[in-house]
Image (cartoon, rainbow, N blue to C red; front, side):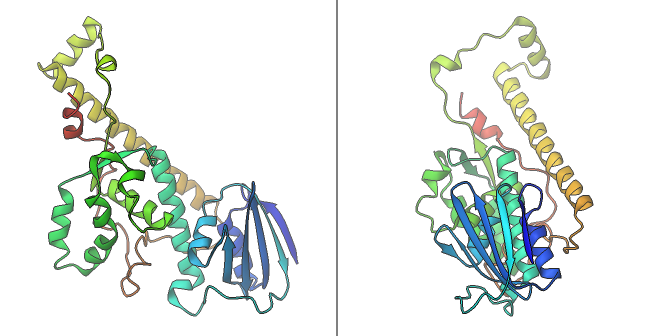
Length: 297
């Protein structure tokens, strides 16, 4: 059996599910520009992955981010290759790999929607203190904080993410997980880069000033409040767009995969399963804060 196709039409998730359903054995080769990846499957289970010098689980998760490129599958014996994954282990089971891979892709898309890059500046909020206290009696929160707390400690509102987290020994997936959770749970907010005095001098039309002062006699505070609410609306729109996209994916997905349970930190503590929202229901992250805007004045 041979399969060939485009990842923009057949996602990696659906491809692996097809191989899984057929309990097939063979090799999947994927190409994206100059990058090449190889996935070995045996009786439908992923047993070894190679991409850009990496192998195993983390290599597989990086391929989940390939939303375009080509693939080919050739059925046949895979021989005595080194197996970097063991389907008998809970963390390497097919369902677990698919769930974590899908979560990783969703988290990466979430950061892209918020336009979070290595140049973004974040600062922690007071909510992390509340969770530190709660972690003393909640093992689930305590396990999760082992990943996010080191990140928060390095966010000073001055350095970019790439600089602030340079010494943190995290994989790219752990980096994406931590930052996406911090923003989604309101544990950190975006701080705008300082602007020069020349660009800070802005002349507003009289009617704009009059409208702003209807909300606050303090013009500066009125502008700060307006920016905060605009950013909130933008964040809610991004979240709504993401949720709508997930709904469309579920409606069009005939793979039969079990629904994702947002198991963000399953690879941190094997004895702990994270179900649903990590710290309870919360509104979409607000990508700026009143304090960070006030500091710019």
